[in-house]
Figure 1 (cartoon, rainbow, N blue to C red):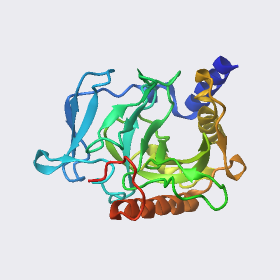
Figure 2: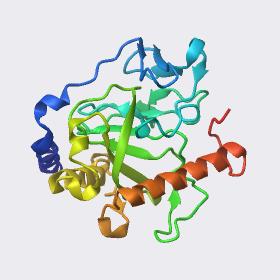
Figure 3: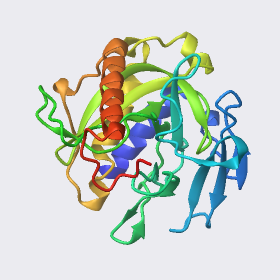
Figure 4: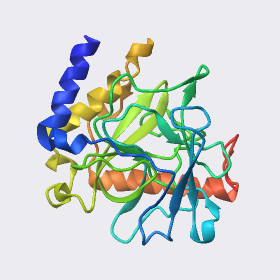
Length: 270
C-alpha cells in the first residue's frame, strides 16, 4: 500500500506541472539570493550529506544573519519564503531554530541524518518572523503549536534552490496535526511563476494537487512505523484570506517571542 500510495502521489504531483519542472536544485559554496533583499547571501560550511553541513546566511558586509529573525516576513510583492527543501529531493533540511544564527541543516533523528522515504514533489520551506507557539492552544482544534516557523508548500513550476528567498502568494492553508501538535502548511506559489497568474485562491488549485499535498503529508512518516498524520477543519483547506490571518497570528506570536513575552526554551533568538 505504501508503494502504491507514493506512485499515486507522484502521478498527482506531475499531472499539472510536468516532469521537467523537477530538476534538482544544485548546491554551491556561496551564492547570492534575491538582490533586493538586503544583499543576502548564503555560504556552506561542512560537507554535503553529513552532520557537519550548514548553510549559513550573511547580510551586507558579510555579517552573519538569521534567516528566521532577520529576513522580513514580507517583500515588495509577497511573503518571503526561505526555501529549505527543493522539489524532488529527499534530504530533510530545515532552519535550525536552536543553533546560533539559525543556519539550514539536515534534521537528525536517533543519531541518523533524516531523509524522506521518497522525494517531496513541491518546494518546501518556511516564512521568516513567524512562530507556532507551543504554549498557545488553538481555540477550535485544541492543540498547541509545534515550536517552529510556519511551513510553506510552494507549488510553482520550477525547483527553487535551497537557501533562496522567494516571494510567494499564499493560496490557502492546511491544518496538519502531527503527533498532537498543530503544524500549519501554507500552500503558495512564487509571484514570478507563470502559475501565479492563474492561481489566486485555493479553489483555483487543481483538486489533484491539493489531494496530493494532503496525502503526502498524511503518509510520509508511516515507513518509520509512525501513525498517519491528521488534519483539522474536516481535512479542508482554508482559503487565501484565512491563510493570511494564520500567517498574521504566527507573526504576532513571533514578535512576543522576540520581546521575551513567551517562553523560548532552547530557541536561539539573539
